[in-house]
Amino acid sequence: MEQSAAQTTEAQAAEKAGERSQHGLDRLLASTLQSRIAGAGVSVELWNGVATTPQGVTCGTLVVHDRLALIGLLVDPDLQFGDLYSDARIDIRGDFGAVLEALSHNSLRDSLTLRERWALLTEHAAGVRAARRNIHRHYDIGNDFYRLWLDRDMVYTCAYYPTRDASLEEAQTAKLDLVCRKVNLQRGDAVIEAGCGWGALALHMACRYGARVRAFNISREQLEFARARAVRAGVSARVEFVEDDYRNITGHCDVFVSVGMLEHVGLRNYGALSEVIGRTLDCRTGRGLLHFIGRERRRPLNAWIKRRIFPGAFVPTLSDVDARVLEPCGFATLDVENLRLHYARTLEQWWERYERAVPEVRQMFDERFVRMWRLYLAGSRAAFAAGWLQLFQIVFAPPDLDVRWTRDGLYASRSERA
Image: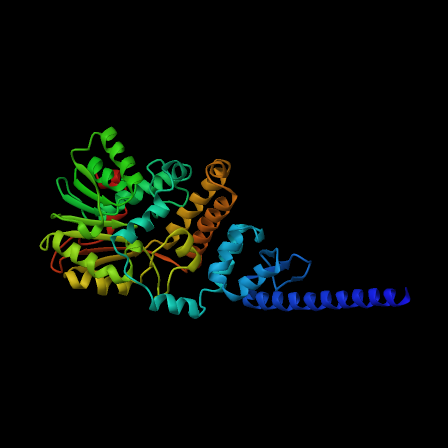
């Protein structure tokens, strides 16, 4: 009996020693994570009560629910943060958007990670089949889902806010009109649009400006929606929605536009896009506009976003687009504008609408999907607010074409210009 009691005591002591050792390891790992995000003012709290707090004011807490999750955040944060949040293995306590923005600011000047360097080296050109698969995974998950939180015209690109208090609907209409003004769109112009979403820009050009538009897309659900809208608007004779890849675009045009598609092209396919622009856009009087998410330096898209949300996506720099798309086809850049803050505001309004629609989203999908898209929308807003991402609009034309004398008319309202 005495020997058994002694053995039990020794086992208990060993167990307590092990717990203390694990507790010490957990504290060390938590401190390591805290040191990496110290500049964000975000605390770290573990499942077992271990907590670390940075010096200064804190904006919230990163709550980690298990040891493997903690290790994942240290080993591969680019991918693991998103997966762990989606699986409810980490949470954020405090203002969700403010914490994400603080974390984005904290890592803004970080050097490229090994994962990011490898991603740039292995960036490949997606063929037509792969492009269709990638687009299907994001855009064909259901028009009813996107209708819950986009504006009434289903515009899924950065809006333009003429005033800070403009509604999402007002800002999206203002963006469509701004694009038309930037390319000096005239009645009767032939327009080619590469990547048309749910058709809002093509219909705006036809209805408001009297243009003839051929819009290309490889998302079947989006095209069905766009064609039905054209019929209801009575402009199906002036707008043709074509289910085909941008590489197969044929014909000639006075205006070439692409809003929100360049991110899906991939760096190694820029030559193909350049060839399309060169063979379709009038080399004497043609005007074009590219509207795309960009970066101030070459860096791959966040690993989680690319794997779970936007497969195959690549976010270019201005120099990438100028050197690989515009220079080879002989067009000159006339105007560049960065609408980064406008995209942060757009995403903020999408996210607000999404949160109000969460009960419906949960019925359509599941809790993991709800959390995944919450992080995607709020995290993207944070990335634009912090400067991780930019939103560029480039206007281009033949080098000797006189498009406008000043930029004054670009930002006047339609009534002011009438």
